[in-house]
Amino acid sequence: MELDRRARRPLRAQLEDGLREAVRSGRLRAGTRLPASRALAGDLAVSRRMVVDAYAQLLAEGYLVARAGAGTFVAEAAAAEPLPPADPPPRALAFDFFPGYPDLATFPRRAWLRAIRETLREAPDQALGYPDPRGAPELRRALAGHLRRVRGVVADPEAVIVCSGVAQGFALLGRALAGSRIAVEDPSLPVHREILAGGGAELVALPVDEHGARVQELRALAGAGEPIGAVVVTPAHQAPTGVALSSSRRAELLGWARETGAVIVEDDYDAEYRYDRPPLGALQGLAPERVLYMGTVSKTLGPALRLGWMVAPGHMRTEILRQKMLADHGSPTIDQLALARMLEGGAYDSHLRQARRRYQARRDALVAAVAAHLPGARVTGVAAGLAAIVRLGRPTDALGLLNAAREHGVGVYPLGYAYMEPRPWDDGLVLGYANLAEPAIDEGIRRLAVALAELPPGPAPT
Image 1 (cartoon, rainbow, N blue to C red):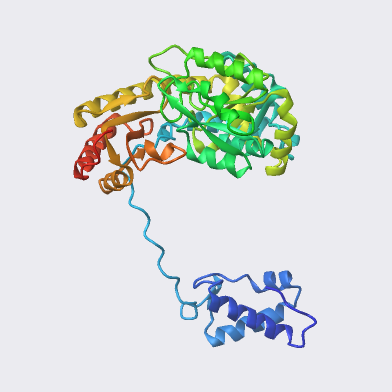
Image 2 (image 1 turned 120 degrees about the horizontal axis):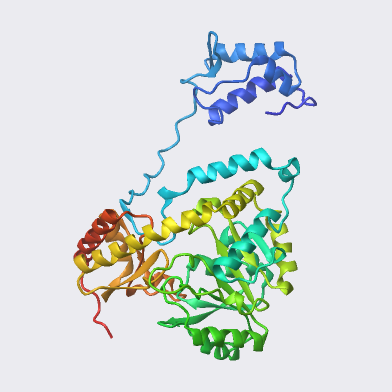
């Protein structure tokens, strides 16, 4: 509330008018406690007597009520008309196969709380200043060591840039490569494509088959227009199909990048989880000068932390850091220091070991449930990760199945929506299993089968 001391209308009248308008408009809702007269007088730089008199006038008019020992409140009868009721919340999903979550119930709360407490107790005062846009040095050192040991990444702390999740990493990358043509796997995550395009990049589709991205088509894509400046791949576990990039294509992709000077963006989003195959080292370890490596804790700890990282080639760091400065001046320091403690103290590795065993059991439960309730369907992409592809055996109306499953309390995610040219009829579903216990997986697939049976038959396979 502002009082105009140059106006001809007395200040007390302005104060009364302002309070009336605030009550009528709903800015001051029924039951709201008004400031004490002394406090409001200090805020407005007026005498306390003026505020007391204004309150008394509005008490007499019925706008306010006084409660002995409690203060002055907005009267119920004087409040503005209630707002129209909000739209009802969407029906809760009892069995949500969202592929982007780890097991949220097993977030290591005690280990994280211990790390936060130790950070707050031991961090120097300087750590509470504006953050280093590259990330806290402690976390960059811890990440460099972890990535070298676990993923074979050539990671110097100076090459590590901490960002607010991989989503921000893609945003920074899109701005750093604005105007470039970027090849993206097709299918891939639509939100990542939108972020890159929003930064000014032109996207071209790079098809995916059972051996991963068809990198042999990159030269043809470049020949169709401007050169390809970068290609985004998920070689360890393709998102969303779950296939791994074959060794021959990995070599061909690296050769193409060296030949053309293009950048390979390696999204290593869930490579920590593997069940039926040996670990695949990161591409970045074979050509650190040509590969920008990206990772995140969203699939290991939880998306709410919004912590990710890039290991950037030297020629890209300056521009990416400039974009990071423009975006937010740096990610929150305290969470970075807590993660560094978990990495260096072993709590992070311990959490991952337990998670692998749990997720493998849930993966097996999904395969068994599909076999029991969806005869004729097959499950692919199960050797690693937190999600699998269920091929239903016949094209299905994606939107119809999504809505029918939701009516039964089940959340499913059609594969056809992951293509650059969406496929409204497709036989694939992307089903995440990490955030559901084994009995819930079985019941969810049973309900999915019921929903599928309610749909009219689709077109015959071609």
